[in-house]
Amino acid sequence: MMLTRRRLLACSSLAGLLLAAAPLTASRAWAQAGGDATAFVVRLGNALVAIIDGPGSYDDKKARLRPLIDQSVDVDGIARFCLGRFWRTATPAQQGEFSQLFHEVLMNNIFGKIGEFRGVTFAPTTTTQREQDTLVGTTIKRPNQQANNVQWVVNQTAGGQKIVDVVAEGTSLRLTQRSDYAAYLQRNNNNVDALIAAMRQQIAR
Amino acid sequence: MLPSRPLRRTLSVVAIACALSACAAKPPSTDEAALADYRQNNDPIEPTNRFFYKINDGIDTYVLRPVAVAYRQVPGAIRRPVHNVVTNLAAPVTLVNDVLQTKPRRAGDTLMRFAINSTVGGLGLFDVATDWGYPAHTSDFGVTMALWGVGEGPYLFLPVLGPNGARDSAGYVADIGFDPLTYASFGGSRAVQLSRYGLTALDTRERLIDPIDQVKKSALDPYATFRSLYRQNRQDTIDRTRDDNRATVPAWFSR
Image 1 (cartoon, each protein chain N blue to C red):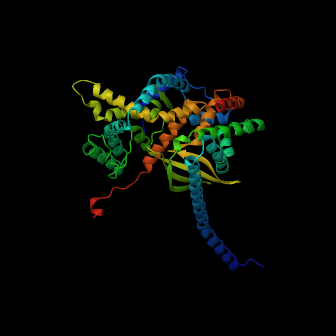
Image 2: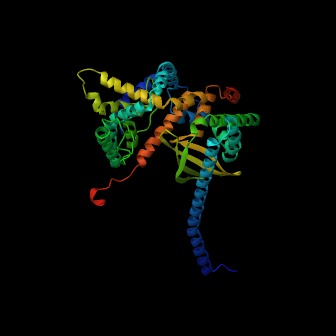
Image 3: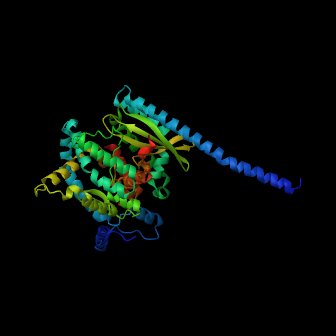
């Protein structure tokens, strides 16, 4: 069919309508993602509290926390972020070893906090969108302590929705960890093996 | 905008320190990623800072922390009023800064808190004002300068005060000037002022026992971790102050 002027006008107005509608559907999609992320964080929080406050020994709780964290937190993504610019220059063997050790260090840090978070309550506050991440704000109240504002950064990864960062009172977990590793590497000749050895020592402690 | 005199003085001290080669070695411009990291760290006098960190760490481990831990044994019924008094005494400085930041609602909160807690709250012993709808916050001249557009300046680790920055140290000095208690003379004796600083330091250190322990235990480079935490926290405080645009409601509006 010939592209008559009338058809062109019709096409462009249709395109205009679609373009106008697109932001609406996009924002609805964002809103949907936001709502999903909030629900995800609330579910995760409830599951964590159930384990921490629940029955069982310290080792039982560790055993039950581990799979929950593995499936809800993008540990490999965070590990890669935390190695920062040294990830590209590291060998695949170093990358693998680092990720594995990072996993252990993260787990140990979380397990160390189990006692501190007994009886904790939390409530979602505001959820915002930042590029591809959803920031779910919560207020976390530990007994006999002031309430803290903690934001959970949720991203849609290949394995589903996962936490990629935790921002406690404005300080980002993975940014701080990356500074730590970068400073350590800088003082050790950018040697990733030295970092790996230090992490192994940390876990052994 | 010309930097203020205390800031210029701080900057010239930093420049001198750099000249005396207490500076971190700047990576060559061929290593872009390292250079970007160096700029991002904003820590040109890192060796000097690390030196002060080590000294501070020693003082902290052998003096400050043990005293804070012992203070923690004191029942909370005594520690909480001490915290309230110390916070209340900081209200005038917070008020001056709220006004300078042109945040009327925050200034109003601070003024009401000071008035209520000093009277109904028994000279600041009890925090009644929060329950009456005036949330607590503190502010300082470093935040004020940040809201005026002053950049954070190089990172400084000061001997007793700990993590700081060029702008924030200048702000700290200015706040001493804003504090009416600095000028009050209690019969020529410095005892009241010194005990007030001492109690503030003790109260702060006791509240920070667990976070600082956690960092020292789990960080490979505690100095760098404290630096990162301090700067992120500082930026968050500045952002939250800037975004606090709650309006003051005129009296006729609520009738």
